[in-house]
Image (cartoon, rainbow, N blue to C red; front, side, top):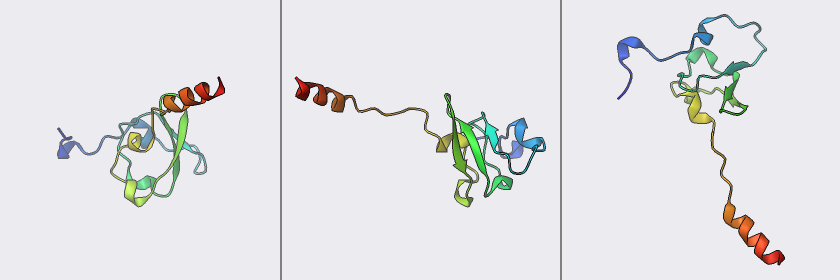
Amino acid sequence: MTRSIWKGPFLDALFLKPSAGSNSLNKIWSRASTIPSFLLGQTVLVHNGKEFKTVLITREKIGFKFGAFVVTRMFTNKYKNIKTKKKKK
């Protein structure tokens, strides 16, 4: 189910505060926040649960969630490790 139109997009309270400096990177912990249009062209740091990843805001990303552009799970190929161990024997 989508969010009601009369409520508007979800934005964290962080976006409503004036930023300390225009050159500083904004750190964002709220992955569920919608990307607003006033961040166009800026680079933000989005938390993936372990560390911050840089995301450049482009026109195509406006309206999506911050969490859509930061991967939280790291894929490791366990079969590749098994094959290399068997060859060493």
